[in-house]
Amino acid sequence: MTPAPTTLTASGLTLRYGGTRALDDVSLSLTRGVTGLLGPNGAGKTTLLRVLATAVPPDGGGFRALGHDPRTSAGRLALRRELGYLPQTPGFHPDFTAFEFVDYVAILKELTDRGARHREVRRVLEAVDLSEVRGKRIKRLSGGMRQRVALAAALVGDPGFLVLDEPTVGLDPEQRMRFRELVAEAGEGRTVLLSTHQTEDVAMLCHRVVVLAHGRVRFEGTPAELTARAAGRVWSSARRDPAARAGWRTGTGTFRNVGDPPEGADLLEPTLEDGYLLTLDGDSAAVTA
Ligand SMILES: Nc1ncnc2c1ncn2[C@@H]1O[C@H](COP(=O)(O)OP(=O)(O)OP(=O)(O)O)[C@@H](O)[C@H]1O
Image 1: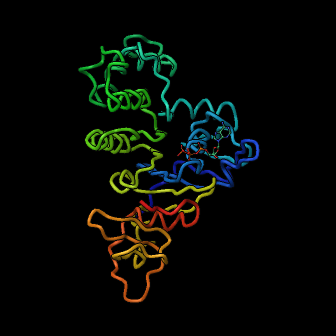
Image 2 (image 1 turned 30 degrees about the horizontal axis):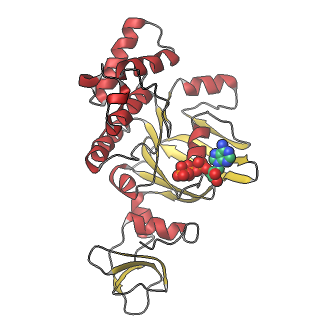
Image 3 (image 1 turned 45 degrees about the vertical axis):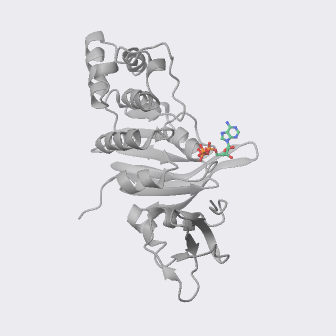
């Protein structure tokens, strides 16, 4: 199989907030499909997404996306025209209806012809399954529906590059499943970068994953490769194993440990979460639920 063409290449991205290095020499590449961005709180995920969405310029380094270099004003404009961005806290006006909000975003995206714009708004609301509630005020919608309104807004104009910042936060399992399906659909033929705290989101819908910690890339590869990092390094024990890098009590009362197993340990099949925890190793507090 020929490798998918690269649609975004970032090199040496650096961004400081005062003394904090939110991004520290970040280099990565993306292809079409959904790439997951995992990392603990404060890892720099939102900062990276804001840089790639051209909301804030980096202090150092640069990137090209869909053939555009946002360091030039022409490149920035061209990229913004092909970009859909779902920020961590979408700035809804709660009194807007779903239709009015998406229409407003469509106006900002330069869809000036009213008829064509309204057709586009109906199309994206249909794509996220919200046609029936398009006349409802956003404040009356559930959290899952609001996230879908935000996704619809990001989809206006059929962007080639979609940046989604923790869109599954606060959704119940059913809403999360539905949202994942929509993101998977959106990832067909598009470059999607999805930041999330849920390793399950990555396992279920991403073809690539990037792990960020302390503003640095700790892993870039496929979910299977991240899982494989934990092969032979996950074991079960009756008590918390002090040798484990991380360990937590499972529903059956036994402990699941990751790290370097002792001789004769009862090894378990690794999951993507195990690989993720081992990749962070020391960058985040051990899980001790
Ligand atoms: N506007 C800001 N001013 C000062 N420091 C900031 C600002 N935004 C982010 N930071 C700091 O930069 C670092 C990276 O933050 P960022 O929000 O990008 O992380 P994150 O991975 O998205 O975290 P979370 O998962 O909690 O949303 C953190 O140390 C954060 O405190």
